[in-house]
Image 1 (cartoon, rainbow, N blue to C red):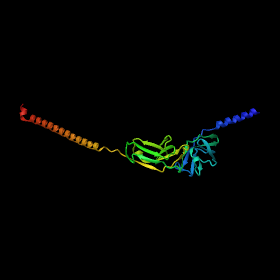
Image 2 (image 1 turned 90 degrees about the vertical axis):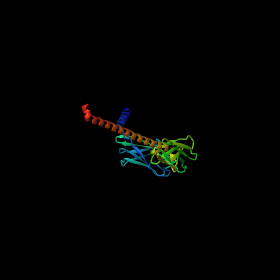
Image 3 (image 1 turned 180 degrees about the horizontal axis):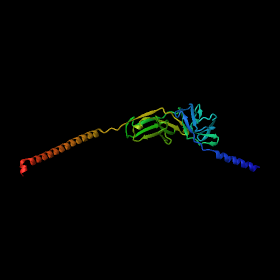
Length: 269
């Protein structure tokens, strides 16, 4: 009897496993997407491609919370009304369906970086200052008041940092923009994240502005260019004059021989 019951249970498990389906991966978004400070309200939205029975939210690959999806919605929200240090980190979501049973893969990760304004904003400087010519190498220095951690270089209009650097325990970072072009122009800011709290950041209060101008020719080179143009014009005129004179003499000689052949003396000869 026990053997028969065990066989029935095993058979049911095999049938259920056979009915499982491959489910499309959900996506996760953050609102607001950046600039979240301690105490702010932040919402994580899990977008499921089909109706789900339950949606699970993971933080740093650990279960954080979950919600029943009784209304069959395709977007499930998880909100933190008073964001804390412990809310920062990397989030993913996943959903489950019942008929047929299945579990999706986890979504791509989303980082929740929380700004702590008790950390003083880093200083920032630009070398050369502001106006530079195309092709110049530009250095941006960032420093803080002895906080060890990782520095990030931000550019206004970009959602993610454009560069990052770990100064190996120091409080200063140096970022270099090589052979700048007009696309590098803009406003830059620095932030840092202290050791042990990688997703807790300082503010982006201070900034520098980079302006890139087209490279100008050297005055001597400009004079040389004008001199070369004059020489080219003179040579062209001389060549045209020589060609015109040669053509004139050729036509004159041809006219002379025609008149000579048509003269009476020419006939008698």
